[in-house]
Amino acid sequence: MPSQSDPDRYPEPPETVRLRPALEKLPAYVPGRPAVDDGARRFKASSNESPFPPVDAVRDAAIDALAGSNRYPDMAALELREALGTKHGVDPSQIAVSTGSVAVSGDLVRAVVGEGDEVVYAWRSFEAYPILVGSHGGVPVQVPLTDTFEHDLEAMAAAITERTRLILLCTPNNPTGPSLSTEQIEEFLARVPEDVVVAIDEAYREFHDPATVAGTAGIFRRHGNVVLLRTFSKLQGLAGLRIGYAVAHPRLARALSQVTVPFGSSLPAQVAALSSLRGEVQEELDQRAEWIRQERSRVFAALRGQSWELPVSQGNFVFFPVGEDSAAFTAFADERGLVLRAYGSDGVRATIAEQEANDLLLEIAGEWRGR
Image (tube, rainbow, N blue to C red; front, side):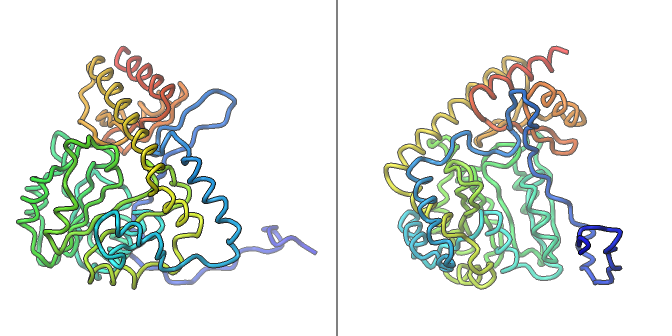
């Protein structure tokens, strides 16, 4: 019997299906490249992944959960939402769980953005924003970052129109690193109409200096149009399991539950996330976060010593504003065993990874500066 994969025996029929015209304008999401497996020692510092595997107790819980994989997971993720509700001091119904905070962001767009409605966000920021907005018929309104690679909140406020339905604030900002303070966010919110949703994307919150991190819990309680986005992908090391959540006010939380993909968060992901919230696991995660902060400070200081002028990062990464040299810099690093992430002609992001990888980054950066 001929193979169905044989193109000579089974040619592809012509496709006459109709696709949405909006797809032609969508940018493609470019993930961080993996390190090439060529036998040499290489490091991947292109995806802001944790250099640590999941905590043992979390890994074991996820493995044990596989025994029940013949059954659908709890679509409501009730146990996890109860734990997160306790953590954030809200009713469990105000927690919306999905496959990473990026998926929750997509749910948010579906819930509040109609055809032709506008979504305001800084640029450059998280690569998925224009894809999520455009794919659902929204109009992206990209507001350039300041010269110091921070959100230009004045310009963002000025960009709000009658068609604005959603504003995305990424703090710390990915890929550049600067963060927003409580005061900055409050002053900005004072200029936002109360019917416009403001999402505070805090995927990297755990890596922020605890002494200066924005008080978003209080901001959430003071503003009925604010929603918080969080993830288990970064510090918790669960990027491969895909789980994140939103903390929303009741009406918006119900809307998010209406538009999310049913059974989106898998059983192992829910169990792993729940295990990550336990006290003894949190203690270990806090130690890991402190290690990342110390490594970031060490790397940043060394780079400053090499005369690099970098934006101050509060994430688990640093950003090199090398402009048109972005592709050349990533190729230079790749040749020496370190995979970084270029952002067009804006710059290059390097994850704070294993200490050996961070040392290699400093070596490469110094060599680049000394050319």
